[in-house]
Image (cartoon, rainbow, N blue to C red; front, top):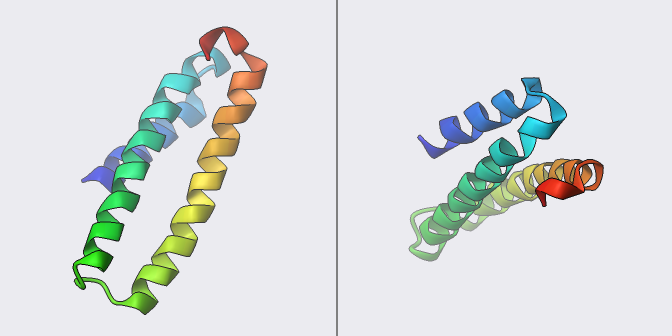
Length: 82
């Protein structure tokens, strides 16, 4: 469910005017951070093996960088909404 919510926020932000994107993007980032935390809990509890966790972590890191970069770009363009 969290993944679907992240996708909803990202797709909404993609089609909104620049000044309206930031709240949706921040929500997406917060929910995505929750997904990463849940993956870590699965790995630490041995419910997810090392190989799968490593593969998922790499993808999560890349997605996190993309979302963070998008947020940074929007913040620079519209500093009043920081």
